[in-house]
Image (cartoon, rainbow, N blue to C red; front, side, top):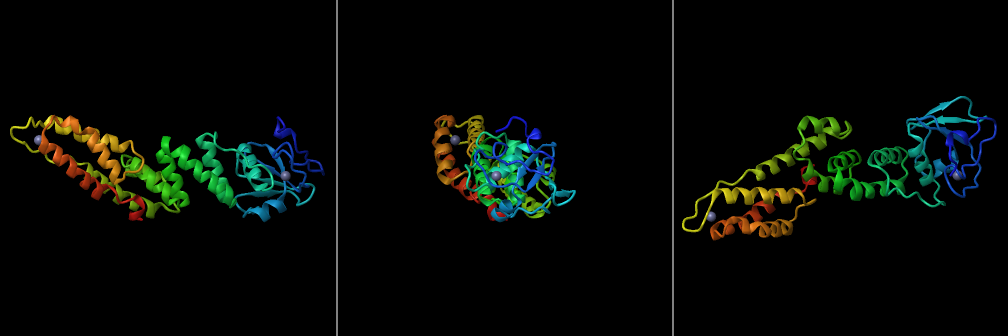
Amino acid sequence: MSSDPRASPQTGSRIPLCRGDVCKDCTRETDVIFESTDGFRLAGHMKLFESYSGFRPSAGMEVEGERHNPEIVKMPHSVRVLRLLFQFMHHDQPQPDIQLLDSDTLKALADAVHMHEVFPAIQVCKLQVEFQVLPKHPLDAFVYAAKYNCIDILDKAAIHTIDIPLETMQKLIPSSNRDKIVYAWFQYRERWLTARKEPKWEQHKNSGCDPNKWTIFYYKVLKAFGDVLSITLSDAESTIKKHENLLGGCEKCQLRARSLIYQFGMEWSPPFSSFL
Ligand SMILES: [Zn+2]
Ligand SMILES: [Zn+2]
């Protein structure tokens, strides 16, 4: 890699090779210079990029000057994203490792690879969102999945978005999918909020039954559910069992707690996508 991409391509009649700047070993002739939003220039291969992906100069790009001598294409991406995008488009070169990308760069790269239809990179970005972004930033993952129709990510992330205000959700979801996603999300959230309402406590005589214990038990169980990425019936079962000791030994409360498993199973298990 050269240290300063700004210095690499010359603006004279010859376009330098992309080797060193974008790829390690590419020896193809370059036929175009791309300019990033932050003013860096990278040499590239318009024909290769067009044949490998849905890459089109019209996709948010602006062609400047003559088509020869040399052509400079302004791209709506930072140099960091542009370099990764071009590395993915060199199908005979090692693909870049994006595991350590910060989440903003990953989102920008995901936008770029979708814009230019670089299909193998789309899949890699999706996996990164699922395994890196989702556990730490489920709302970001949800918004990404809403934008690009990734149903499995929507289903895993939705549970972590139910405390987000409706107005915020409306602002975050891209307009292309907003009505459909926000309406489904609203219905999904209502189901959760209903399930979350604490069942009325009942006094069980001669059993050490205590309303405070029931309340603590109930909220600890809810909290534990909030920490599980996707709720399944068996998650519900083991979580409730784990907290039963909080009920102070009242057997009727314990029985009631077990019946919650089915309530949670019934109320909580429909995935977000079932509302779409
Ligand atoms: Zn190349
Ligand atoms: Zn009781």
